[in-house]
Image (cartoon, rainbow, N blue to C red; front, side, top):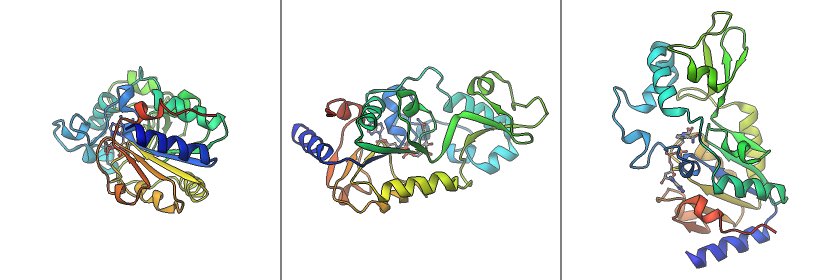
Length: 241
Ligand code: CNA
């Protein structure tokens, strides 16, 4: 990996508008399981497949079961940012990284100090009453039983994009703009199978496309540098001027 690390360091040294595009693999080193690794959520046994239980129609038709699953599998109140989150925040502070675009919903980039974060799939930290739009913290949802209700009687919905739901258009536009203007794109910890999020990487047109992932992805072939290793372990070794 030494040669790849040197190459990555060189590319980072030459860039000043880096965008990081990440997924669940960025937070596995913080103890949050991803979906598609062998020990991920998709390999555990439930009454319904996770993509069904995390769909808009399931949320509407079986809210009790939705919230049981949601509390049990998507909330990690004790998770802390890892070396990857921390290095990215450092790179932004040093003026080298323009933004993080993430499919994650755990808020760990902001917890590490990143300011410019496009959360394509929302965040478990924000929750709103569907009737009066009052906001609630994650802890309220975590400690509630059954379907969480607002003081007005409405259902409180996590600000998380469920399967069958569209992405927020401002977030999408912002992510597209920074990726189009990037002089380096680092893609990490994502299987690149969830659309439309995965299609955003097509807006990068430069020659410093880096992929850091434990397993192979469909974008390996077109990357200028591929590193098959844990992203925290890799980024930890990068020096930011
Ligand atoms: P995914 O489909 O589970 O893929 C994760 C990828 O990361 C796999 O290819 C793994 O090989 C790889 N990987 C796992 N650990 C590491 C690591 N330490 N270093 C490098 N690579 C690693 O996840 P995607 O993000 O691609 O799928 C999109 C879904 C998953 C989004 O909608 C997320 O909301 C959702 N998700 C988010 C979280 C979170 O917020 N932390 C957790 C689980 C799932």
